[in-house]
Image (tube, rainbow, N blue to C red):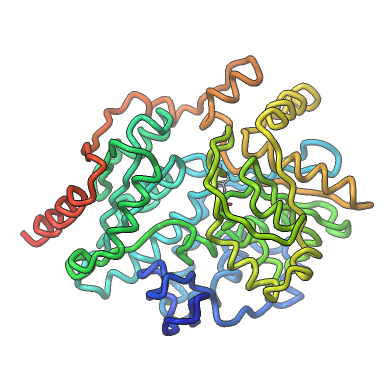
Length: 438
Ligand SMILES: *Cc1c(COP(=O)(O)O)cnc(C)c1O
């Protein structure tokens, strides 16, 4: 499979190059040259297949012949070796729980898949790959865990000192081996700026194979298609109209759902549920796309003012506002509305929502009012205990922490302190090359 840049000013590349580069040289996002629907019989008989088979069928055309079938089947199986339960919350309202992976947020699947693909490629490369990533919380943990112990891959994570939760910091700083955590005396934006500068630095690129591990990378974005197939498989009644609501920030997850629909999965309507960062919601209402600086909310993994995957969504809808509007609704909610619904759902049903899932639930309910005889799924993207302060504060009760996390909290943090200074990062990265050469 070839990938082209959505800026159309860079050569086409194969899957491996798209993964190793991350972003095209013209700064465009990579997009697959063709999308071939799966056989109708496969989707009609989806109940008869294992989740490993379903995931393999969904991803194989996007990988092509660069990874052997045996290796790809192994990579897929290792990527998804935990549960993705569809839980009935109310009649016709289901929560797809995507937080049963090692770091308790949905980003595990993309990170695990990408790590294993890089591992498969690096067998043939002489130079190690260095994954450089800035995190405001969840991405760093998923990447650290996903890439731990992958041969030929070094991971360097930048995070803002004092601005991630305890659990999130421990997930980044206690693994050791090929994972290095750099604690930056600055904000997330500072971390992101340093990472972007590094990608453009010629000296660094000569010395290192640098790549990124956020959802612009096709190997992190595409495996998120699996969720939608797994959800559909678990639906008992497959005859009703299906609405899927995705709590969205960078719009990688929902865009993967739209890819699943292109492959033939019968999803009738998508809902992009957002917090106060509502550039897409406003676009669908007004036709004007106006990115803004992000504002802080209680669903902080969705605090994105300029969603990088939106351009892929436009590409999937013929770059037409009207085509997009016919298959996507979008609603935005305040923190107060989010907290109110968390309390309400707990009281009415006993189900505990995290702030991101709560935004998804709200969007789903609003969309279902407009659709007759429909059923709906919202994606529950993180375990409530990852946002324990907000959840306990809102519900006025304790949330149980899973035992894996309890033991994590007692481990010792190891990080390197870094001033908000690019040259210091550069020196450190170059030094790590020397160490590898010794
Ligand atoms: C990253 C994240 C999101 C947003 O996903 P996008 O693919 O960026 O839209 C939502 N919820 C949680 C918990 C996340 O970590």
